[in-house]
Image (spheres, rainbow, N blue to C red):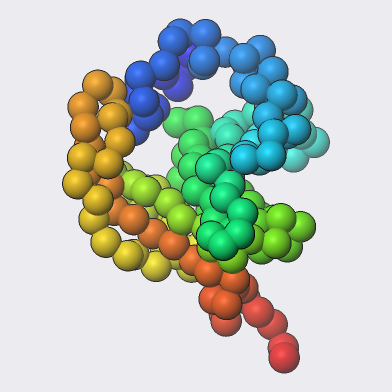
Amino acid sequence: MRDRAFLDRWEPTRRDTFFTLEVQQRGLAKRREAEDLVDFGILLDAGDELVGRIQLTGISRAPFENAHVGFFVSERHNGRGYATEAVRQAVDAAFGELALHRVQAAVIPRNVASIRVLEKAAFREEGLALRYLQIAGVWEDHKLYAVTAEEWPPKAEAGPQ
């Protein structure tokens, strides 16, 4: 609940219960088994503090081999690189164990922090989708970003060849 006001401007309208630890934990446990999504918690240190979540959703198999990535981090843990690292790990999983070809994301253009996360994780901007998602009751435009298996890992992180 502490992060509701912080997240409401970027997220679809959700019930109060969504913002409780119990619902987050139950969602993580249940969604790990779904075929069209993979849901991860973003945990600190020993794994005892849930500071955010990241999901690969809408997983589509041949011929698309694609997933959408979405993420959030609590306000008090924002800006510390947790989202960037989580996105990198989710993309590793997408191109590794899930054997996908493409991961894409959609971000409200004024959400500069999330755009920076995607750029640092080697996503490229592909365009603008008008009235793409309903966020806080308003149809919002979104910038579209993507990365493909051929572009991963980014050359700066690939290490010696």
